[in-house]
Image (cartoon, rainbow, N blue to C red):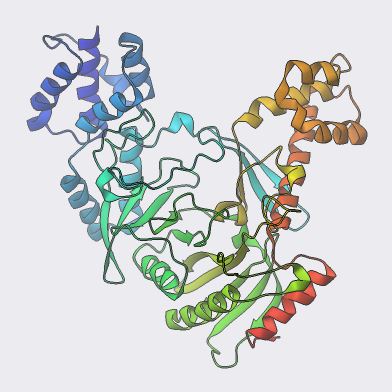
Length: 495
């Protein structure tokens, strides 16, 4: 009976969402009305199983099995009733921050967002493997939640965009824009109003977003860096980064300024140094060019002002830098093409800033962009390369999960005809070159396990190519000559 499930929900809220005894009757009656139940259940429930739950997935399955008319938005609304009101969460977050530490405060907000179904863990069970690349290892992940090119555009409706603070408690118009169970925490960053919210996508450990309270366009400048460094003073255990302020190289939402944060060691943070550089006028900072797939400069210093000053020099210079030898055009009378992705961490009171130059210009020979995925690689990723990929977390679309299995079937036995497989599974046609390369290199009659490992390895090689394609200063003679010209333009010296 659905009335039994209501009692389970109430007890779940008390165990995992701080539902107070004083609010229990109030929430119960709202749930009874919302679910069209005349009276509550007055029997026993299995409390131990509820106490041991690490997410609400089992109760959600039970709800939907008893009422198949419940939408995802309805489910989120139900869990929003079990969740403390925003003020209570803000007070508890701040209390934990002050009395314990920033890490525990983040843990509280993030775990609450799992328990109240805002972070839907069952959708975030990505298929992952570490690819051992020529330059460095990076993580390849088939994203089982988010599809390719699902970019919401800003409009005049309410809320203005999916990042606005007015989303808190918002039921939603469609079955994919519910924010009923979203809870945020206001922060003062650089004497401005910002807020911290958990990301529903869980791309990183403790994936959070730092969002401007004001609905203002994304910007990449000295202030971007100053915000990142100020944030690190408040949450030194997290990283913080921002995609560039241009289209087709990162964020889907350029209309609302925000940053990505997480408690992870990203692969780029383990990259080796290729060149040590210096700026005589700023001797308290270490500058490096990394041995990494994408072009990346790193600045280290205990002095925030020095880092911000150097970053401003770099960003302003690259925003206006042209080099015909590598097809780099920063802007024309139609648009701005160049900008910089940023990533910052703090270790032992030392600030470390990563600056990744990006360019989104399109020409007929490269319809996805001169410094983006090539046409021949869109079979594995027909989407833009954002900050997370640039830093070594390469996300692939969920469709590849099934397609990898089908390709593995072809490699593991002679039974399947390639043409027959493609005729039965149209999704394989775009992978024909990959399949032929696999057969040429490895042959057939592999075990299914071996075949799948080979497919994953070759996909990793394609990811490696895509990352290298996004690099402004490629690891070629022309690319390295262009790199040193840019370094000279910054008036940096190679040690």
